[in-house]
Image: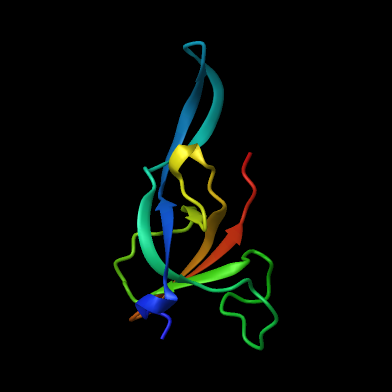
Length: 119
């Protein structure tokens, strides 16, 4: 039911690619920053904000605020991917969610995502 196109929304995602050195004035600072791929669009089901439930799919913790699910078992999103939900990555808008956990099943994938504030 969640994979009906009427239940899906367009988001953007970027995959974590590793750490790179931070350069300032052409010199390495000794610090590193995470790097990501160019944001790509994806249609996927995103749940409303997490509330009280009898069974929590990822256990009882506060590491996620929403869930995403898809029946596309080839979906490339992984843990540490960043997401733009309800906003666009255009104009260098910072992401507003990140993936905290992934549960892969035989016919579907469930993602635990957390709202973040990026400055």
